[in-house]
Length: 534
Image 1 (spheres, rainbow, N blue to C red):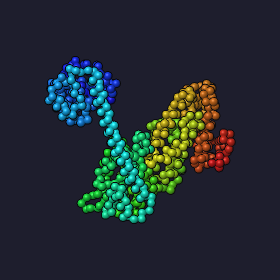
Image 2: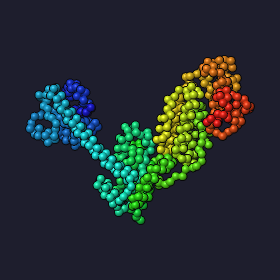
Image 3: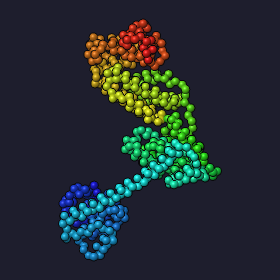
Image 4: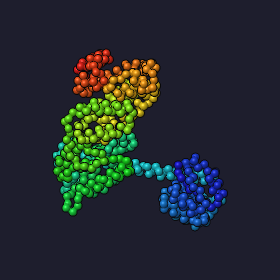
């Protein structure tokens, strides 16, 4: 709706116009009703109206002075004079001020005021549409130029370079001002957590356009050239002439930090910069950019919101699956015990472990995918736990994760969601005492578990406890405890090199033969046969 300020020192006129005109139906919002010119000027400063309907002869400030000041503040303001003056000099002044309409009170009719306001609204609509058309045209030009720059760099990176002179000539013909006589430093820019930003920006195309333009504005580096490769990756070519007078590296770092602050302040977008060596040789320039784009380990372990030199990252050859069983058990216990406080400390330790070892990125993602899928399956199958489990979605999500920080943050969200789901499950699926007994079993698998001891722990006599447990779960307490232990045995056979005797001991069985018998009864195979079948 368009905003209207109404000014007249005759209160009957104000009341008549306020009550008689269907403001909302005209798409108008009467934001202020003023009894003198000074009050109306204050209202114009406060509300920035689209239409000013004013008398001429008013105390404190006359209507013509009010119009002059208001139009200086807002040249697009629609002004309508409502006056009892019909002398020529007033009309002449109104024309000079480009007043939209001049109405005389003596011959005033409601339909006439409505018509004048309707015409003012139409003019405002036209101004708004013209402004939007100009904006769309400007955006089209900017988008086309950004697309030209993007394609130029992609061709440079993907195609052989036959002639440096031709390359510079082609760049200049496209409006890309590159100079042959100076070195350029490549700076690769990554958008942190780009996976989460797409929806906020209304899709990848819009996101790329907004960030490209914001970076152009924020980069206070003389003659820098910006190329967008995607909504999450950009390349800067920084003219870099070495000099003893200026520390160009420090100047660039300060400029990049300022750009980081600017984009985070206005768009809540975090950026990471990797800078290379300043070179004039185009093949070396290409190799540096290609090297950063291909170096997933540098991006993954390089830290978010950082500015650092593009260097190779050495990853370990250690088999990270050696730590799988221990990590899996800790995360599962965290979920089972609904221990939100422990999540933070566990993930802090995990983050430190992964950062210090620097495992190959794809191996780490496979390790993480196996972990979350098994956690999902354990709560789905073992506890009849209904989830929106989607393995393909997990695979796609982890595949798009670019940094260690993003991976750990995603895992934290996953664990907190599982804790929330488990809490809801315990609360609704079984009686409180049965849920407490189930939790006890899951967190004490390494101990001998007797029904009498657990019944006492939950405050029930063994007979009553046995009956309600079978009623709520469909199995006896001993069957449930044995099944949980055998599930854990399957995990240890799969995830560790422990012997059958050691696994039996870890699950509270003194007699390995008895353990093997229970395992065969549940799975149809001996532990050794089960391990061979994996």
